[in-house]
Length: 331
Ligand code: PMV
Image (cartoon, rainbow, N blue to C red):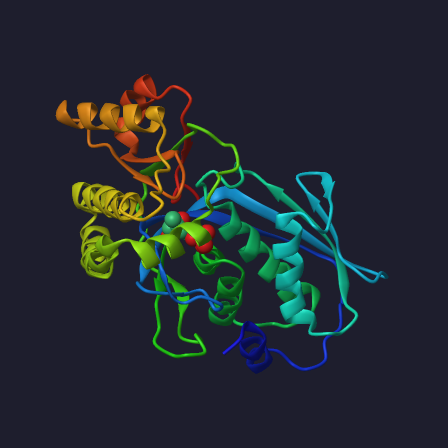
């Protein structure tokens, strides 16, 4: 099944651009990672994943209908040529909605997070774009279906439709209509996510290509679905019992297991830089001194630290540049 066939099942045949719309979606950090697709064109995952959304850090996307024969793309205040990789992904996603109808937009995206440095900006970008299309085209789709659509842009985007803890249920259907995220009710006041910026440059191999290479070439990948299923179960338990050590340990081990599969692929995929390793060692040293501090990492060199509010000062002493987000501070 193609993405267009899936969209045909969800949207009316004729669409009209009603108004301009600006929408926000948060970035999200997976505590149990999505790594590997069972179906590539629909971004259907091999495993379920669980994330926490980053509150105010994410993407603002404004869509304005224009009387033109192609879209106009602006990113962080600058016009982007349509042949740029980012523009191509955005226009291909909008193509799914317009399906040959002459509906073109000025798309202005502003990120409050560094792009393509393992900080999941494609997730918030496609989630905000999905919300803006839903609004500008008057679709009034329910969140579950918006999550299905956002997934077609980027897998992890299906989780950025929601705040707080979010689970992406992997689903079993060939059309992927059961593969979408759901928000968990549980909250965790005092939970902190610290962003350590080792390098915010564009990475050479994006997660899309990275996960495919791993799946095709790493024998170690065979153990990944089992690891992910066990970790998901532990994370649910940690969240229900507000057991921080279980949460941190599970997230860190899950991230390192994912990186182990990357390193075991060919050509090898190592996103770490010397500074990433030095920071891991700082985290482990602090933990040795009794500070409950853990990290997770995505397909990039940056660490995301996990700790609770009482540890804020101790953590800041060792990571003075840290940008701290409290996902449950508001609302
Ligand atoms: O949605 P993508 O294709 O950018 O993949 C995201 C993959 C990871 O960030 C490494 C893990 C995750 O679950 O977010």
